Length: 400
Ligand SMILES: [Zn+2]
Image 1: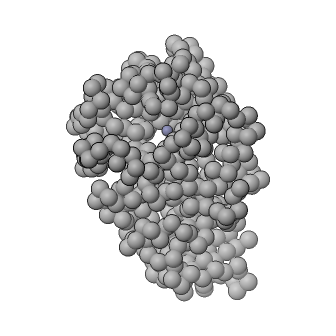
Image 2: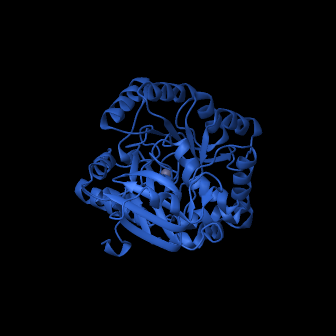
Image 3: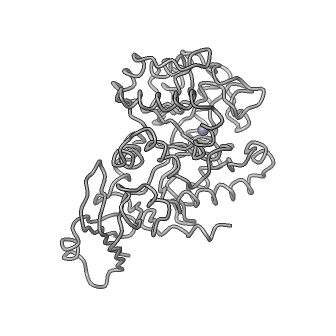
């Protein structure tokens, strides 16, 4: 089916490029033409399915680079997960995937679920059986026995098990290998945030093996030691990337950031939608340190992605705007924020030839909003239409 969408403004991505008034022509799941309304009308038959948004803006769908669909964002998502059968879990994951889509997020990278159930959901969406965002799946993250999020099923000990686990994850159909470089807060009695979970040699093995099977590596890393080892090993993205010293205090080491920038290794800060509540709990000094770190990364030209860690207790599924507001809060101009959440995130996830911009040949992943998001990010809170590969997203009120 051909669809023609017109609007007061098209933000075609990258940075600041717009067409006013503009039109997008879609054939099935791909964009076939983008331009001024007059130009596109000339290429279109009068029988095309047409939607006009004279007060609206059309922009590429958002890309959330760090979510956990298996976690329900309740006070104790781990308990909820452990109590769920696979059938219940996948049903919940499917509903949460649609929450992202209804909020304008047309691609999510899921960085850890139980035993790779996520691939079933991804494949059902890809087949067109159910509506949902494009999913990049990590399956169960690599972690030492009893390590951070061991209950997801990715425990490994020693080189042989590391090799086997990566082979198995690739066979399951993963799109990315996730490794838990440090401990974390979701695993009571597990290693802490500043504890290393893998040696530099093991990290090199993980990256070598993952790249050999054609998969990028995303590492969960808080400490500067683990970040530096991960950069040396050649990982692709660094999740959280908080640059903590052994004492848990910030240690913003320029040489490491400069190497990340030089090698184009992206930081994926995974900032929760409930960051304001978190900052209230942390107090002004520690909140300021988070803002300073983000500005420091950007000033050092480290590529920064958009992600929310949706599913953990303070980060809701389907609330991209609250996380984007954090970037606004620290002074990133809105055009830069929108680029970060679309074109830039697509680039660093290796999706530039599929999504992240309004361009002929790319998937018809787009959002229509009332008003101008360049002037007010809040316009993104209630999209008039979300298309994922040309298919309209469900209305949020349909979600049970
Ligand atoms: Zn996470």
